Length: 164
Image (cartoon, one colour):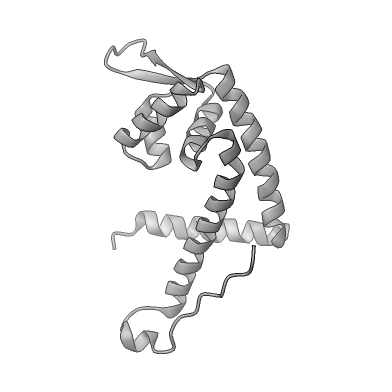
């Protein structure tokens, strides 16, 4: 993949956007670009499994949970609507990766469980993705990776706590 042009903020940024920060805008734009690049790389890796990033994440959530989850918990973790998760689960169920089970105490609720096939495909694609993530992030040494994680956590906390 060829290097992309660096994101540059116009020299008259502060004149055009009083009270704004060119560095904050450049930071936000670079975070979004990085996320887009990672998502594209992951999508390319899991496409041969017939999965989208969202369906792969749903399988990963279920695999990590170790027990069936209600669809609303999957939706919350994916940050998507219940309607969207229903379509995602329909697709995964058709492929034989998940099954819907009745809830033991609430007849109105369902639980989503990984099938053996779903557990297997989740393991296979996650192994592949995690191996590639190691290679992608080798551009940063261990200390730089730790610093980046800490900085991203601080930014995430500030964004979660902020009202503006």
